[in-house]
Image 1 (spheres, rainbow, N blue to C red):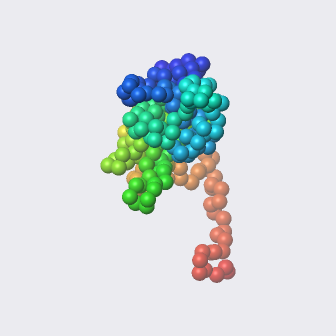
Image 2: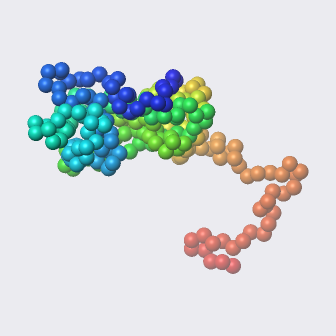
Image 3: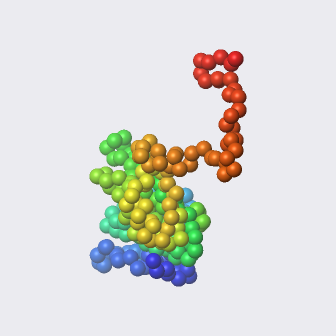
Length: 249
């Protein structure tokens, strides 16, 4: 995977995203609005209302983010409201925004590491209105070396985390990466993709794969002494049976 210069800012990466809006009536540059959203979220904003409020409260930072238009009275800088943020993000699409963030975080030195550890895990976001609008199921790749999520994909309702993980591997640097995960990713095609890319994996094995679990238990059975002596713990007088319901002798 090719790496980009680490000097590139998040704003410069957002400038590469095609603007889905019509030129007529466009007030705010796309890169400036996306930078505003990212900055507000880093400061704790968790909704469009909070992002819009952040832009209003920290209005003096607007020109630094690329929002240079003034209000009619010339006292403040114009920042997008909730409806404008919603319209833009709905037209942009989450995948495009996530891809830009992935390119930026990988360019911050992640892809330059000779060795790295990446944990893959899924999480369902909190929904609203009960079951009418369920939370979005996301699969994230968290790099322990930089303490950041380097890539994230939505898990479609008709598939599972395993299939989405195969797509996630296509946008991550595999060479020199040790992937960790739970039993959901202990699949032949996932492991083959990691190995073919020059990476390694350390995955959980549970009862859902009885043959593999039995093979592992057999390979890591009780140790034996090369000299033929009785292994530690063998040949000793057994202690009292302390299982539930049993009485010590």
